[in-house]
Length: 239
Image 1 (cartoon, rainbow, N blue to C red):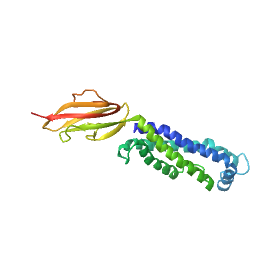
Image 2: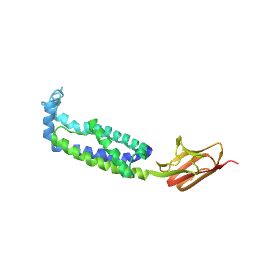
Image 3: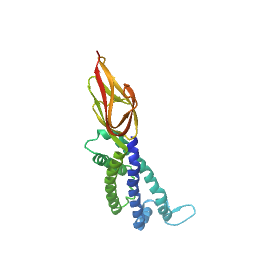
Image 4: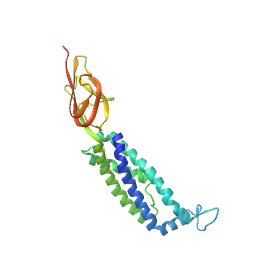
């Protein structure tokens, strides 16, 4: 999840930044249309005539950029971060091969949520909605590719192998990862344990690639992930 969050910061800023810039362009390119929309739909809040006790249509328009856009940017960014953390959490369970493909699988969920929670922006008329829809599709594809790229940068692929799956199981944290290949955060440290059967004896850990074990002779120790690699549990029969 941490690697997903780290990747999501950069990808999320670009994603939400593209939507905010598109809304800013719409705000000023379609200024008169927006003024008319405010007049017709928010007459109880925004009055056509300036007065001491009321807010004018122009004042309502002027508040959109400094108030409304930061709101949707703030909420939208944390929405993207939530999906980025989810991406990191379920990465190894997602179908397909490679971080880019998996990133493109999670990206549409972000776009659907933005539309569902009405964070797309100024969708007051067809032309504005169409423009934002195009930007949303492009930004969603870019997010999917970027989350995959940065997630790959912040993670390493580790293979967990037992000499005899029935005699020795490899426990990482609280999960049995025997015979599995998992994606873990780069430079992370994990508690590992070798669980052996009653008729078996633990013989030690062997590593290759970017995996380091604090004590290769201890059945319960820590593993540091420095790069892609392999952790193997060695086991033998008791005599």
